Image (cartoon, rainbow, N blue to C red; front, side, top):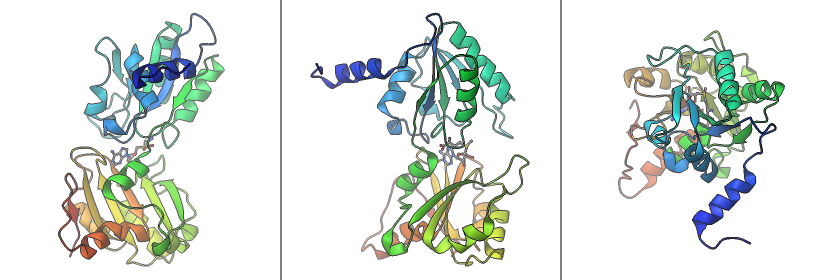
Length: 293
Ligand SMILES: C[S@@+](CC[C@H](N)C(=O)[O-])C[C@H]1O[C@@H](n2cnc3c(N)ncnc32)[C@H](O)[C@@H]1O
């Protein structure tokens, strides 16, 4: 029987869907996607897991607004390992694995809180594998990945028939060695007119990305959008092209105030086109529109 009020319904739903521990003495581990930063973008299940957590291990990129939702009684552990971040505690992935297991073995409800989605450039797979090897079946709660959060917030449609954009790629912008990743750059460049490529962790390689795409034949005037602190109060968005974006990003000190995600493809020009076609200036709170011209 479904309870009539929505809170009881959610409670019943969450109880029904929460994974049962394999061993009675074991706790529960949930890999929870926190989304790109705005807490309103979290799923109902993510919020419920956070509310019930006894230990929360989180990344540096989790927004303050989301962290504020962690219950006061829960132990909050920053396991962030973002390069160059002063809050970086330098934990290696193995140490994070060990902590997850340790707290789970203490019989606690553990939330591993990750920005965006745990399975999109989030090392969620590695954590699930490690836990499984030790007899723990982790639950994964999806989150809105940054590409989707930023696209919605800045109104960059990832596909659009009139723009010819009929495919989307999420790629990583730097390799482990902080160099350009081993991608099929010819294919990326060739398909630029018909796809949206979203680069995660691409700021440090921005100039190389633009140069590499152009040297493989992508048009210099291919639209680009760069979004800093997507969906968060300090969100900034910049619009340019493969040719202009490196200089624009440098001039605007992009990345100094928050993480950055990069869009390449025809629809990156959508927000500017919408502005231009509107009969009055479209003012959107929190979004600063800048171009080089
Ligand atoms: C390790 S990846 C994690 C991705 C995450 N799992 C997801 O699904 O969005 C970190 C990268 O995500 C992007 N990112 C995360 N949060 C962001 C935000 N609020 N605004 C812009 N980029 C963000 C940046 O490119 C950052 O370097």
